Length: 393
Image (cartoon, rainbow, N blue to C red; front, side, top):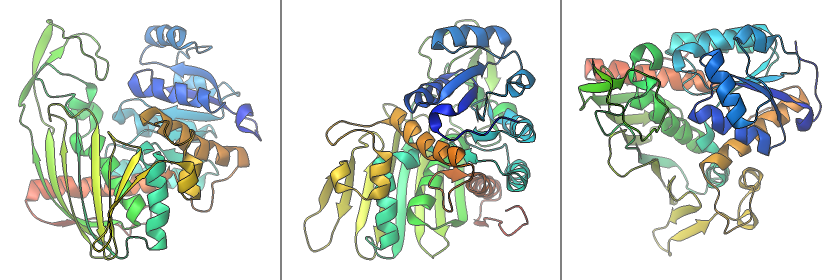
């Protein structure tokens, strides 16, 4: 088991996965002062090459070798989804803290297993729902809890991307054996659902979902492919698709509020557009991840407002998530630093905060329960309740 550390600068981390998101984790950890001891790639050769490129001290040849390094206190899991459960199991058994990419598991049975293991440990167990940590989202969550919007009535939005727009676009997430039965829902829809649950404080109670696969066959390159790669291979094999390109989901929240979200990974020109509007009995609020420093606040009987991210104008949570003064835009990469600062403060303290602002394994499991309900609703063509209330859930 790793030794006790008391400050963030004393904490050592390792990152499993060296692709797009793994690299973002490495860079964000460095920025907050955490020492990255090494990385674990999909193969020893790939890990070694990426460690050199990233300037990381070493590439571990295996998970066992990583866990044998007692300078590693926290392990970040950014591997394909099907590896999350076995890797997190091993990490917790070795007494390490863990930060796992979403979705936490392939299904709710797997996430329930990890939740039980986390509850039986004294480790910090977090899920990387980083979009919570745009400063204006942290600010709005506090203001909603204080009653700024009144009673939440209607929650709408979208999460649109175009990185799988072409039938020559390929990624491991397209393969159910690696990514799970839900693709757009599990990959980007989980972010929107987590964010709305976090900001409104209202769990999703039931769903009605329509999932569609427009690109029925794709051309898979025979070699490895990086996420968001722009190069196209001509050496391909044709593969039939079994996961959704788009989703339209109606939502009923626990307090009776209604919602609707559309998800797409084939919307041309939309690179990473998560949008929401939350309509309450007193006011409304709206935000777009492609304009992350602006929060729209809507009123009936006085002028609407645009709040530009500014630590001088935000509440404590927004200030804590902000790293730059007003007028200096903070974006996607910055959210990882803000999230990791919150997680690593708890690691340094040796225990989780009473009410962590980051997503815990309990949150990750809940989002899996919602995902399972969405999949069931799409199969049955009717409303499905989110099944909570089990020992683990």
